[in-house]
Amino acid sequence: MWPGVDKPSKRDQEVAALFHGALEVVDSTLTSLYGVPQEDAARLEQELFAWFDRLSRRPSSPESVRALRPHLISMTCKVGHVYWMGKADVERPRDEAVRRSLALGPEIVAVELENRLNSRADDGGVGH
Amino acid sequence: MSGEVIRFPVAQPNISSEEIRSAADRILAIPILERRRRVGDLGIENPEVLLLLCELLRKEVERFPANGRDEAEYFFEFLERPPRQVGSFDEREYFLGEFALTAGAACRFLFRKEEARLWFARAEANFVMAHNSSANIARLAYQRLALRVEERAFEEVLELAPLWAENFRRLGLSEEALKCSFLEGASLREMGKISEAVEVFRGICEQAESQSNTRLLAQAANGLAQFYRVLGDLKQALDYATKALPLLEKLDNRINLAKLRWCVGDILREQDKHGEAMEAYRAALRESETIGIRGDVAAIHLVIADLLLDAGHERQAEWEIRAALPIIEEEQMVPEGVAALTLLRESLRRRQINRQALRDLHGYFQDNG
Image 1 (cartoon, rainbow over the protein chains, first blue to last red):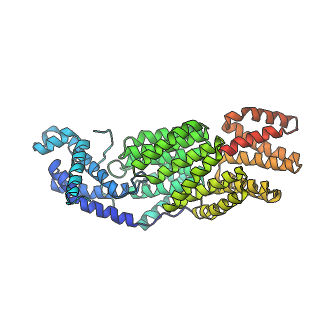
Image 2 (cartoon, one colour):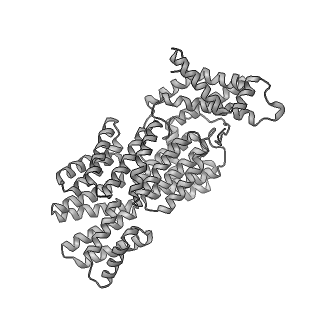
Image 3 (spheres, each protein chain N blue to C red):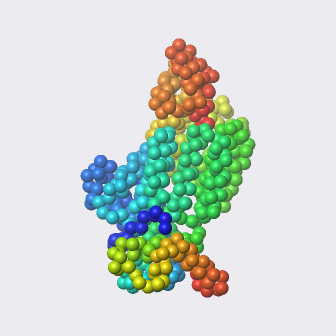
């Protein structure tokens, strides 16, 4: 007989709440910073949620749910970046903001976003 | 940009947690050989199922490490050449790393040090390509450090364990940080600094209790039972053994249960309850044989031989030693105990057991326990 595992917990609900709280940022990152068409972005957001939900259950994930947000932002940027990597040159975006994101690389874009979210939270806005 | 693998997703069907559990149970119920033949139609590539399998195997390693190793190897091989895409983004690399880490941990429990090292290298090669690689590499570093305890590199462990504990705290992994203290305490105990080891383990107990972490509390209480036994405080030793026993039973942590029974045998022996001590040792031996921890099997044979010599049963003691020696030789255990091993083997040949060599040898094993 194989051992049991813990049932879905309060943490799972907190993870879902964190994702939904960050959804606007995830969406604008994909569509504005990376210029992903809305239809593809919606599909990727669904996948990001499923991935993030599983990421939160990895033993390597931080115990604090709040500390998971940078992982979501970071993966969103990587996904936006890789979205264009598979495209032929003729399909590459012309939009300046998107070209900037691709030139900087997802790590730097993620740090910028996280800093912006933190300062908005410090000012009493959303983010936490 | 990092070299992390980002694989774009394929649609996954939504399944409930009950369905995930029954899918995992169904897969595990199929013998590995048959599983290899039916590899394409078991749905193993579902990331929810794989995540649950990882969790189940981590627990299995503490119950039946040999089984945990075989299963982890199977899933690792499956993921190397999956029939369909596995999960989204970094998930295949993460799962490859996780199963390799689990197989390595199982090998460590089984005293297969070289194999453990190979699995850890495989884990590293995959974790570096997965998201949050620093935390996964840190977990790997913990396993490697635990292996260094078994290799008796205590100074190295005492230097590195606090560093990794701090890293884990910074990564937000407090349980992993606390686990590093186990390595520190175990090393202090092996270096004969038992009072310091007791302090470290008492600290673990306090923190584990405050975090409601039954697993670490049980292991720390088990360790304290052993330490107090060595200090000669048999009452404290029994108190901690009594505290650890129901927790370990509840967790079904059979490796630590076997070690606890061994420790209880030692306590009873020191109380001159030789018959009861023998029963406890035999129970620990049976448990260790069942779960396949050969190092402990060899050591307990030697301890039983020592007890039999006390009772004047020289021939029976000889059989126990003869049962232990092939394991010690095959597994190339206790490199520092080679002299004692040679003396013991020689004394067996003359059919006059060298008691000091016997004690030296099982002393090395108990240190490793």
